[in-house]
Image (cartoon, rainbow, N blue to C red; front, side, top):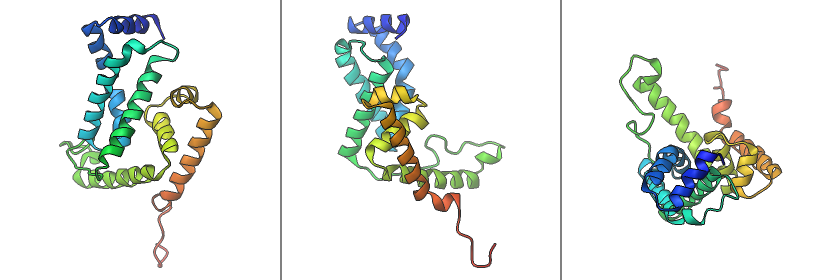
Length: 192
């Protein structure tokens, strides 16, 4: 941890409301991305963010600084999102007005037909990720969405770097199999 982060956490541990707001402002978008990667529904992800920060603010006095703060927070976010997902198990729903959806623009990638095509691809990828074992799914989210290093993922998950690499390898292989139709579409009988 850097000095500024250490001081900020210390202020939080003493009940400084401004420091709590600063931590929220600094990390809420990252927590949202983790939550959304697990629960796949905007409102659920927002609920998870709220739950994570309530838990964090209640438990921050127990944070000893033995690991990096963001590792502690990401672990809390991942566990909360997984718990939320297990409790709710809502069906996946995507709409054009959710994140990354339609916004009027002259750009070709913002045309409704392109948005629908992109949403279909995103839905297929999300479905494939949901088929992975939880440890592989979690590791892929940390690596591909949060862009954590192997060492940071190992610290967050409590396993070795080798295990992280193995989970990524097998998770990516399984995704390749699940998404092979997207990568190598079957040609029709006329060879076109």
